[in-house]
Image 1 (cartoon, helix red, strand yellow):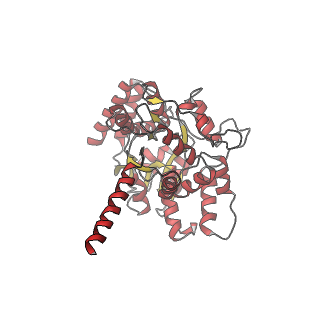
Image 2 (tube, rainbow, N blue to C red; image 1 turned 90 degrees about the vertical axis):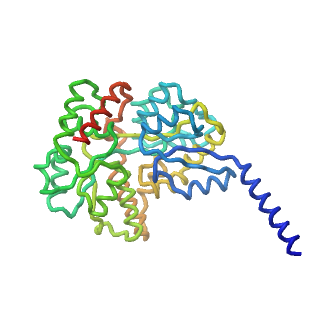
Image 3 (cartoon, one colour; image 1 turned 135 degrees about the vertical axis):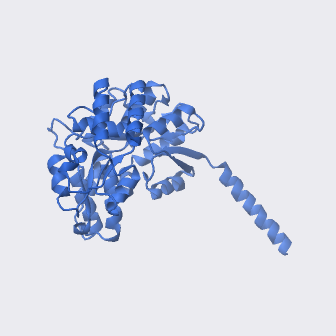
Length: 377
């Protein structure tokens, strides 16, 4: 009897493993901490497709992975300037917008900021990338350091690069991506982050060399400030909000939050988007996943964990219009409205900041070398 039972059990396991092995696997290349796991699980349950997510921590790594073709990713989620570069290098295929039921500018419109960035970066080419999240960069700071908040709000980029404007012994972190560090230096010098001359390169080198940063990091910056191991850092606004929401999960009292962010008038504006590489093997499933994330209720659920601003206007409105007994939702509404304010229809600028352009590869290499030299000085 035991032998027969064992044989039956083994047979069932083999069947289950075989059925699992036959399930389609959708390969996605994404940033870290940049999707709600519950959203992935809901998609897998609805469509019977396994989602496998790999992580890259910079746009340059996204590019190298897609260009190498070693892994045939079905979906990749880079930022606007890298999307432009991938498109120019013929690494992407068109997204069939007719297959996306929820891609509906009339009944399911994008946020004005998304539309502004698309028009700025991809005029006439919106069928190569579908918005995923968008936002800005800002200066995240420790509210408990006396005088720091006033210094940051009053001086913006000058406070970041001129230690004499900060309280003594302020610990400052720079984002460890050369393109972003270069942009910060350009903003400090009242220049466009897309300036690409030998003079601007030297100016950036001089600016970045002037101050010895306590840390060059990525996700570690927001965590450092939350833990009070850093005092000031250049971060994604969404990274700040992600950290804020984690704190609010345990205690929704905003008055107890020890950190905040100031978004300068001149800063980076960005849009991350879904793109489908030329060598993708599961193109139909990639379209299903994009369309799934465009559902307002799924966009809302995704934003509830990620912290960045949803591209879907109805999801944004649901977030900011909440008024009720749930303290966390009230705090979420307040934070979203404060840090991603909805522009008025007649505002000449529909999003704050400057999108990064796809600079010449040779100049980008010079930026990389310059930043590496600065860090080792």
